[in-house]
Length: 530
Image 1: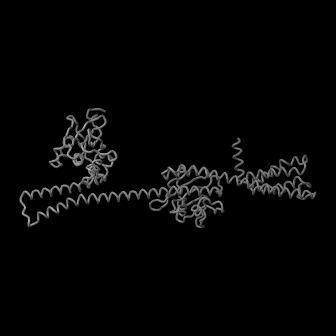
Image 2 (image 1 turned 135 degrees about the horizontal axis):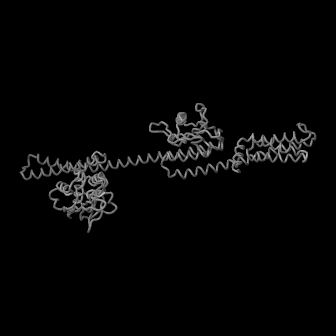
Image 3 (image 1 turned 90 degrees about the horizontal axis):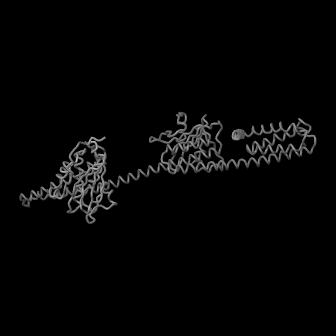
């Protein structure tokens, strides 16, 4: 009941001049029966009380009107001769004038106090709202979520019927990313487009000096109201402006009570617009920073690629050129054995050149998903033997293969997994020095694990992830990085990932490095399990 009365009183206070008329009329009707029982001067005190009440509820203007109406009501109904504005006694004129002056002064002062209190409450409400939204938006990354949060709060505080956020798309055409309620308002889009193109607000009156603390960009948008932007609509369109560009447009629909937006409401709307503009600016800057980082990374990879590829391609080409030039020299007598040695060197250089080019092509095909695995069951021993045959004959003797006899076939792409073991074996043979290299496998409850291990210097823990990066070449041989493109382990990881597995490096016992490949186990299916 009390809440209902407060609500009715607040609504009545919003119509201040009608409240002044109603208050003086009702109080006169209440006072009139006691006219013959109280002195005529006492009614001025009661009327003065009514003026203070009106001033406290509705402000200065209604208080002045109430004081004026009380002046005439006191004279007409309570000062003889009654029911006339004539005054019988001259001293009553002094009382009337003094009442009018005091009533207006008290009403003005009380009204000003009420207005200052209202402004203070509004500022406190604005500050609390902006602080709450600022804390929430600091960690927010989605434009739609940000818009939903801000617009929901704005609609509730402003008593608006709707709200929407328009942002430019890739084609620089505005699009509503969020609307509350989620409905299509065809008439709003052209007005938002106009506000965006002209960087001018629609439906916002010029704010008085002292009411523009929301910031220079918001004030510019609020005061640049053009005649061509007016419409029969009662909603507001505010461009979201920052120092660099216009980020979008905030639309706030008409008030649910049909009244216009007050200056305090407009100031809060401008503050919300600034807050949303800063959020969108932050997103724009983050996107630009991400793009710049991507470009820098691309430049770095390009430089690494050019450096690595130029070395790996120019070295065998230079050796080929030198060897062929030697064979073409007419002043040198070549025997058959020397010619064969030179031709064998040419074959080695061509093989190295072909491997470098093949590694680049394989990695590009894997990253572009153009080399998808064709999986069929194969014996792991067949894959390992095929990888061994690709190695130089003098290095095959360093490799020991120890696979379980009951190992079931693995469901893989034969060519791709041959390349996997070839890369791992070549890597181990290069870094392990003269130590032996072993190939093993085992089946666990979760997966099938295969490994290639050596007894070399091992890999430090801080490099165990980096060795799988493109163009990275570890320096485990006396601080000198071996030759190569640095793509072998990167290709290995991409192939294993394409098969749904994982690859990592760990310490071998008693020393060295072990590269482990884990593929999902099919033992349960092979055993007829569920």
